[in-house]
Length: 248
Image 1 (tube, helix red, strand yellow):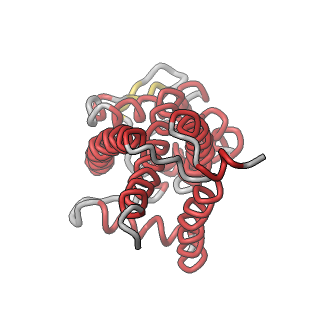
Image 2 (cartoon, rainbow, N blue to C red):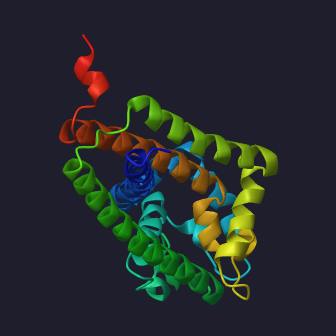
């Protein structure tokens, strides 16, 4: 590798990684205030019928099937806001039945799991801020050294490679098994993370893991749109490559 190509290679690598992570983080930040489009998922995944089926079977919490659609959607929003704010208020979330009675939504094991999720989100927030700083530094370096932005073909190849690896993993092990394996590696060993519908209103409310697939797809679409927009902007901010300058 020529010495002049070394800074270009590392700058492009830092750009790929930081741009991808930043796009994912920004996508998450845009979707969280909208509760990850839960009302839409509620209809598409037929969560109302799911609640009516498994709510009465819950072994710990009564009358959840007597809550309204609006109440169930509010509860999911409360969970989202709690995990986005470090787990604050998780144990205070209560559901109110159509008869006016209220009960705590979460069992202690569920609250501990959601606290683990909140801790993970906070850690990923810190990582994402580092990537945003890396992105800004890389763009400043490339502009200073007059390095052109990578071509669209390079971006597509890099993104396609990442998606191909993820796709092969999902095909080899299956989405559900991959999801479960990640839980065993990410969360503390002595903390419960798998809950049957009959034991967890949280899991019933989310129709897990179906809702997570919906959120992942939506998140991927939004992140891709941010990635395309970000690439379009940096193409106009960084110098034009010699190949593009000489193109008739």
